[in-house]
Length: 485
Image (cartoon, rainbow, N blue to C red; front, side, top):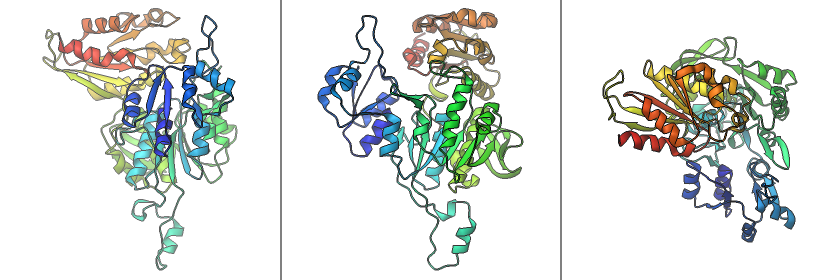
């Protein structure tokens, strides 16, 4: 919703917004854009008298224990008969019309892959618009309208039609509609539109990055999510391209329900796009032939797969893998994706394996067992034998419901120690992590988690904090506590 606000502001609208407990980086971005943020959902905001209320899917018709509405503003909008719409519908009607939309869907990696693809197109001179569920460090904002239309001839795959025209006087490079890259979420659109958000976007290029069970609050099982992904596939034209992770059986089932577009795969040994080498330095193969090489600062097999997906999507709009991989060398990832928040000189006793080595604190958005597992694996590959302390809170709706709690020990297996913030859970986190023995600790407040970490931390440790929320500012608090020891 913050990204939508940024797009509306750039389009010339006066924009205000309301929410509860907004935290960085989005709160910082809204402030920088001059977008007024009102705390809470009070009915008095009707006095703003806007032309349109754009409603996010956090809003519902829920009632508090005393029977009063949880979202009084929404009730007032309905009572007044005021104009309202959902975020995805507003975007489809006011931004995406006439554009070549490139949509990135999947349970994990949407934000990072969307940022990668956008950066590739930017480096190719295509000036894409974009809406990302985070803040790409290469751009510093989560959304923009964009404006490129022509494909620079030096930076694209040479098509037969273009070669034929090269002999004519004044031949022009091929032209595309302006491009818009969007993170395509399967979560429902709004309380009045229970379809997945991505069915509104009408993409011509789609990445299906992966698919497993999530959003247990709105989906009964994996098959229900697969059905929504198939609804997305149904919206792609025959001239479009679907880029699918060849390692995912769930995505194979999605396409088996019907597919009317070109399909390109990545990831498996028999896929169209494959990688050979370690995640930080690997060759890109297309049809078994080397076409480019990636050498960059990112690690983790998940990011290697994200890169293949972005390269395949960029190719659909004419950007060669070689140009794409050149762009990826300068890709800076997204805020809260393995973002180093502090590197604190060690002031405690020299009990660690490396005397005087600093303690590094990371922030990551991982909030599903698979994402936690791949994030820790990426850090493990990066730091080798150094200790990794995983600090996490089960905050997503799926995690709060305990639907995937049995996977937590597996997700944390490569961490030396794990610390779980259990506040607000209706299930026993200590029991769920009991198979980890002394490697796992549980506390019901952020301050208690910090105290547990401080008891165990050693010189040279890497503290990985994972949450899809603000996590009570734990990164700053840990750094301050370590500096003040």
